[in-house]
Amino acid sequence: PTLTVRVQAGDMLYIPFGWWHEVSAEPDERAGICASASHFYHPYYCRLGGPSTTELTPVLTNPRYRHLWPEEATLSPSPS
Image 1 (cartoon, rainbow, N blue to C red):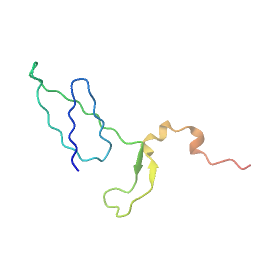
Image 2: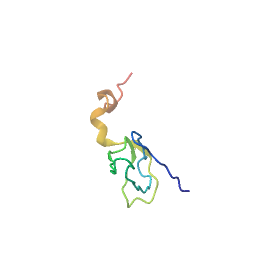
Image 3: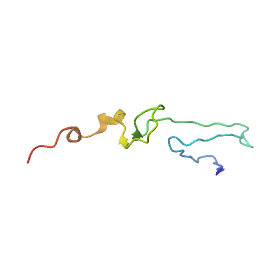
Image 4: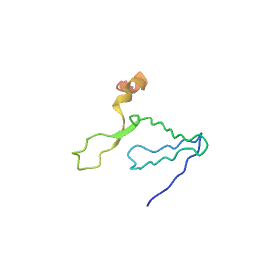
């Protein structure tokens, strides 16, 4: 299915990681200009394996964000 969205000045559109999309822009009628900004980031959750993977792998916390995890989360549980 196709979804068409029109954003106006001051609006923001979030497109989730991996969603195919196409963007077209039209200049503002009064100012005659058109501007947009994109921000790319690595998703917090990911599937590891790369493009050659043929099976759906489990969803994991992205290792790129390991520096944000509390230290306790990286340690083994202590024996009780």
